[in-house]
Every structure is written in structure tokens, then in C-alpha cells.
Length: 117
Image (cartoon, rainbow, N blue to C red; front, top):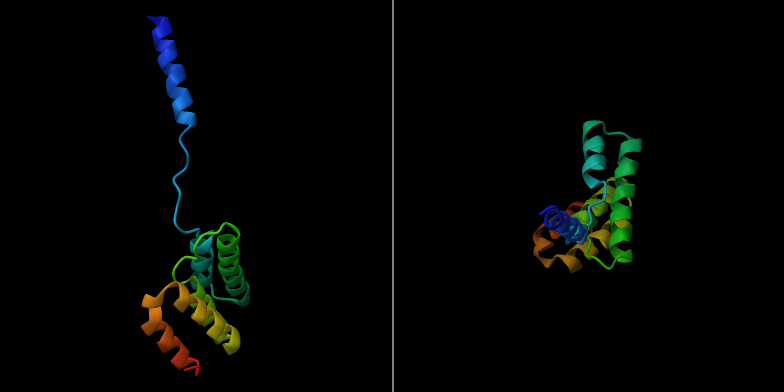
């Protein structure tokens, strides 16, 4: 009886070790944390941290051959537009539109706001 229980326990442990973490479609990195900090205490430091996180999310997606999450290029484009870097803003908005054509009304509105349409 004890040997049977021991074999069942060992089998359960082996099978538990084979379980892989669920794969996710998108990698969000530390997005929630940096966005929360930037929203709670807007400053150049928290803004830069959030912009860097957006860029890291894009770099990770490219490195791992994953799709960039929806809205990341849009948000980065709007952050660039706020600093007057309209050329980079338009480029990021264009990338958002390439990946997510359903965002066209929102992207066109943003382009209009920054004078690129």
C-alpha cells in the first residue's frame, strides 16, 4: 500500500514539473507600474521611465518575434508629440496603424491634432 502511494506521489510530482507557464500573446513588461507612477506623480523622471518602458516592450517583442501590444506605438507617438518631436510621433502612429488597422479613426485624429494629416 505504501509503495503504491509513493509511486502516485512521485508520478504527480513529475507531471507537475512538466507543466509550462501559459503563453501570452503580448508582453507588457512593467507597463502598469510605470503608467501608474507617471499618472500619480507626473514628472520628467516618471515620464522618461514610462517612455523607456514602452520602448523596452517594443524591443522585447521584436527580439522574441512577438507582436507589440495594441496601443503601445500609439501611446509612444503621443508622448513624442507632447515633446514636439512630431516626426517620431508620426512614425510611431504609422506603426500602430500597420499593426492595428482598426485604430485608423483614432490614429487619424491624433495625426490631425499634431498637424500631420
